[in-house]
Length: 98
Image 1 (cartoon, one colour):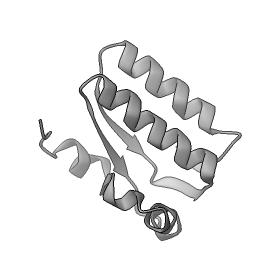
Image 2 (cartoon, helix red, strand yellow):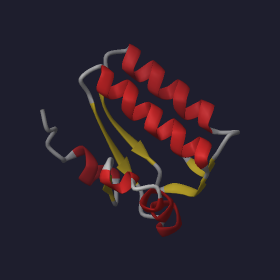
Image 3 (cartoon, helix red, strand yellow):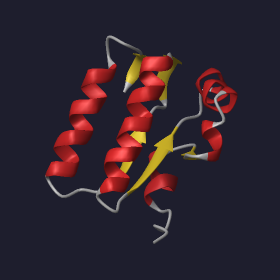
């Protein structure tokens, strides 16, 4: 994703996760490296993605290096819930905990 993850754009993320999980992909990486703004709706869509993936015994990792976006996750204590990576390669190379 790029730009803003907000009320207007979060349905795109939500639908992408629904499709991936329906196709049997339950270990996902969401690349937020191009996102420079996230609001409560965006946070909700990421939390919703985590719930959907976990309900299918999956695992969700986030790629995010934008400090403003990371700070929003930290302010909501969501940095304790999600695993963040600086790039997709490091996220993909992370062993899945079962």
